[in-house]
Length: 139
View (cartoon, rainbow, N blue to C red):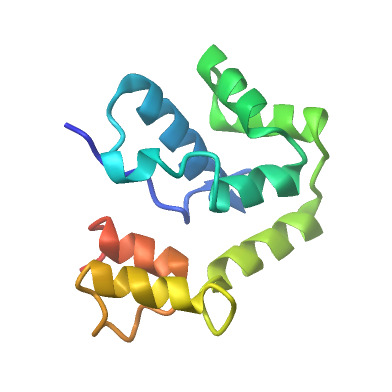
C-alpha cells in the first residue's frame, strides 16, 4: 500500500521536516510512497532543507540509501554541508512552521486546500498544518 510520508513536525536532533524528507526518500526507493509525492521529490521543502544544510539532494539520497539512522544522516549533513547550531535549528523550525501564513506561499496553500476539499478549514493557515490534514493525521 502506498502511503504519505511521516509528519513534518517529527524532529531529528531538534530539527523538524528532515525526518519527513528522509522518509520520502526511503518510501520512494521501496515503491511505497504515495504517487502524488513522487514528482516533487527534491524540490519544494526538500530543496529548502538541503539548501539550508548546504548539501546536494542527490548526494543526500545516496547517503540515505546506504543506510543509517536519521540522526546519523543529519550528522553527515553537518559534516558534508554545514553544521547547524541551536540557533540555526530554532530559526529553521520557526520559518517552516509559518510557511503559508501571510507570505509568498499563501496562494499555493489556498489552492492546495481547495484542491483537497479543505478550503473551508480556516484553522489550516500554514503548509505544515495543511500536510497534517491532507495526509489524515488531523481531521
